[in-house]
Length: 236
Image: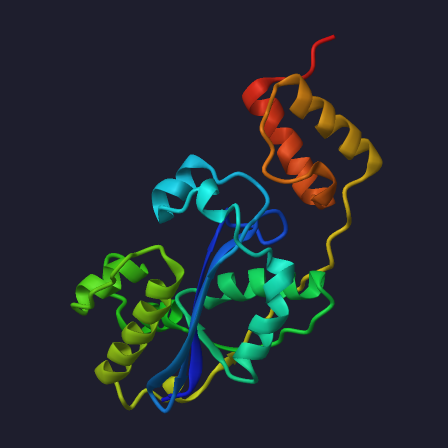
């Protein structure tokens, strides 16, 4: 069993690391099975939080207004993780967002990972669901505030310990797997996108949480599509 690692969870604005953003980081540094420190912060994504994410996490746009930007904290977080493996439920999801943020800020972030979701699928194939909340219920673990980063990171750690207890002879618990995600640095918003998005925002009287010029090319494209879908195009 790997007993020194970073238990990790993120909350984000969506599922795509290329277009969505981190809104919360929760991590616990575990040494020899004991939590020795934690890292927890909200993150200002500079875009509005939609109803679905608000309902899931309880995090709203107002809570994030005065929080740090990811570019202000990603270097410190990368240093916090040192050379330790990261553990989480579907850990490749969290890794992909962090690697994207690191690459955007000219940082290297390569990790070995421990995935409690993969372990649950291998060891508990009979269970109807393998989600973190379901596993917490199955193992009688108190999840505290589900879908908040710090609590979910701790829950994943506890699930890992329970899975190990189920099968101490499983050598898979003695290994980590290299996490692979190809991330390219984001391109900045194009002048044409900047102009059109600004016109859309003014035309529909939309309150923007971030300056249009701070968006990436992919984020601007997605925002334009979302505004047109909800409010319609500019009619001359």
